[in-house]
Amino acid sequence: MKVGYARVSTTDQNLDRQLEQLHQANCKKIFQEKISGKDTNRPQLQAMLDFIREDDEVVVISMDRLGRNSRDISNIIEQIKHKGATINILNLPSFEGIKDRNLKNLLTNLVLEIQKYTAEQERKTLLERQQQGIKLAKERGAYKGGVVQYSKDSKNPQRRLIYNTVVSMLKRKADGEPITIKQIADEAGITRNTVYRIKKEIEYDKNTD
Image 1: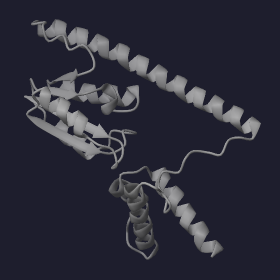
Image 2 (image 1 turned 135 degrees about the vertical axis):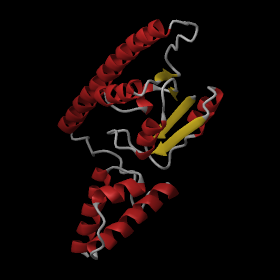
Image 3 (image 1 turned 90 degrees about the vertical axis):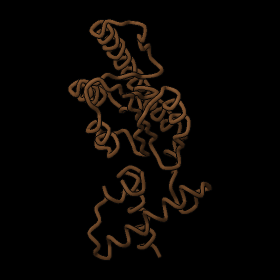
Image 4 (image 1 turned 60 degrees about the vertical axis):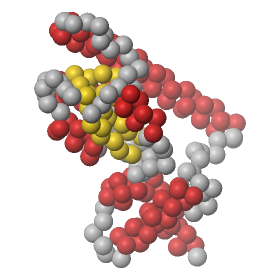
């Protein structure tokens, strides 16, 4: 059976393009979620890994849908292999015409290792360039920090709604309800750092009223 996995990082992103490609790839079952790929602790990812069986084929549109870093991607692929299933990443060569299963797996693994290495190096280069750019901007006095996506003044209605939802949950937490920062982040579909930033912001506003 072909089993699809689709993921976007935030709740305001759209899964339609991925779902369309997975349907075109004849996936019979698709797991989908809107959650960061910063780690492998994702409900639908784990559900997919539990679901697959021997001879199944896991299909994703690109490697970065599995995870952000080479270690996590390798771990997920190993779990897929352990189940006796194979991985098909649609934007990479699939070697569909090769009948020998062992040769097909060998070539697929080779392509995956090259792609993981390339993606990791590109990510490191991007981060280095970002840090260099920030350093130069600070030296010029032009650095003002990143753009705040979730705030009460956001022009995006959905992000404004997410902000208000987080504020409401933080107030419930402050009133004694047993809610963790992680639960708030998971419920809102944002990172824990963003929740902490909003928490610090509303605490500052409260103290300066």
